[in-house]
Length: 162
Image (cartoon, rainbow, N blue to C red):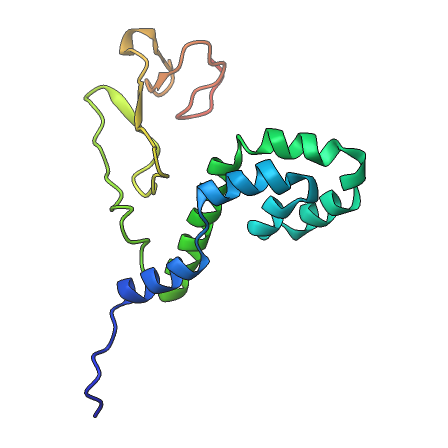
């Protein structure tokens, strides 16, 4: 039997994540100063765009694009880091540590919860409730007495023409 403790999955996750994560400031500086050569794309493993920038660096267009892209680099780096974190967590079979558990917020009475109960919210997701149409606007079917939305031509219960 080994005397070394078995590392928990969270510690393995953080160890692997630190080796692959990228820094936003480095991405901005690369786009600003070396964007002409597409180095910021190589930094985020977008080699196709990096090679394209290297092929056309002499035209000056990649320099202009690199200057513009330095404003978009923080979001791109965060997306890259989120994708890497999700990949590492799924390989380990755990949820991404630190992102919290999804919370199902019950809808207020008379409202329909959106989205469904099995929905896993993305970062920054704000739940929205959609009000149900009032019962007075719903027309009952003469055949089955099921309430139908206003303007419906066929009954939702029996399919009979209204």
